[in-house]
Length: 481
Ligand SMILES: Cc1cc2nc3c(=O)[nH]c(=O)nc-3n(C[C@H](O)[C@H](O)[C@H](O)COP(=O)(O)OP(=O)(O)OC[C@H]3O[C@@H](n4cnc5c(N)ncnc54)[C@H](O)[C@@H]3O)c2cc1C
Image 1: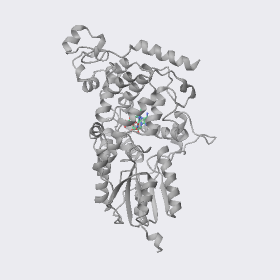
Image 2: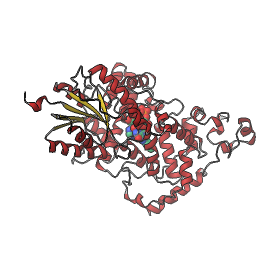
Image 3: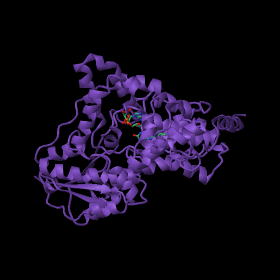
Image 4: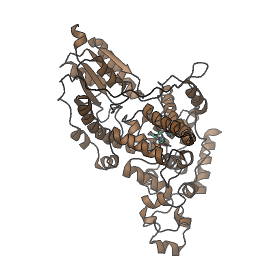
């Protein structure tokens, strides 16, 4: 064997903190070569750095992953701060690697780092093997008859189903050869200390690791998959999977999630409808990635150009009230407080609060996108920006701007018995159901019996719904005419 074919492999990991269905890890194992595993952790301010809650979540998952990798495969993994290129160049001065292996990322900051890494590898005459991971189909694989990307979801979805042939997830590797080069990494504890305590606390509501991700899916399949079509909208029963946290950190792959649902559907045909709707949601995730790939400006600029002239009314106080769950609309405030408490809220609530910020308060959707980026445990550049543009009505396949959610009716419909609002707004807990979603309609006696003084214990609404609706439609007409 020549020297270059016996040199160690540098395995670079990012959003792939799992042993099973991890293409780069398995490839490194199959090479039979000694492996130096490194988790590449973006420094604060670096474009590929996740938001604050997601950052704390990734680090906690890294700790769980490092222990599993050691126990199951006999491999030690270092954590090193920097970009892919920086980490490679730093290590390269100390060690002569034969190859670099990694899983491909899917957003512009990750792709930009991959281009730099590939160039650095070419300059150093080191092979760089990058493998698709974390998506069902590689971005760019679902095209229309003319070879172009779809701009709307339904035809994309149909074509996706025609193209997709499910492959079982890759096996977890067995024992691997550790190159014995580890031990110089940064400490997870010091990285965690860089993150504000409130964000760390939010992430601590979630159990890290692959087993927790599998448990989450199994519970969802047993409890909610059958009725997912209707349960997913309910705020009272939390009828969605909550798998997004693990999925976006790469603790479980989309293929593994798809497979668990597929197996359940084959075991029990009564689950077929719920399973099909759930799998369709996974394809929305891939569509969002495709839209970002085609439009790198997605997080910053509206895809429909006329929205660049939208007459936003920037108002710091209104934004702060929305952020802290003090708008006076209970369903909006409950969801915003859930977000800063546990880094998550259901998809239905995301749509309601996003619509409220953009349409009731006329605040630029980018402000909401940034707040979500910082607080969502499942923050993902493509899913977040795509959905904000969808709600704001300025994306390629977006809900029309004139469709304005009524936060009172949304509350009454999807939190009919008030469980959700009472959980997150305990100050309203004793209000009767009929006024829970509109406390300003409660009589003085009802308020007194519930121990609430409106304007003191809970705010008056920031703006009356009918007025807000009219103001939003007037603003729209200014860019439409
Ligand atoms: C304003 C706004 C911002 C959002 N930001 C994010 C984000 O940063 N990260 C994120 O993962 N999702 C985001 N979503 C999409 C969606 O709300 C979440 O994926 C979902 O609520 C996660 O909960 P779950 O895993 O229980 O979902 P489930 O209903 O169980 O769905 C299963 C999976 O399907 C995918 N999915 C479901 N809905 C969507 C959707 N609308 N777009 C793309 N993928 C979807 C997710 O991967 C999700 O985990 C956002 C939605 C809105 C309206």
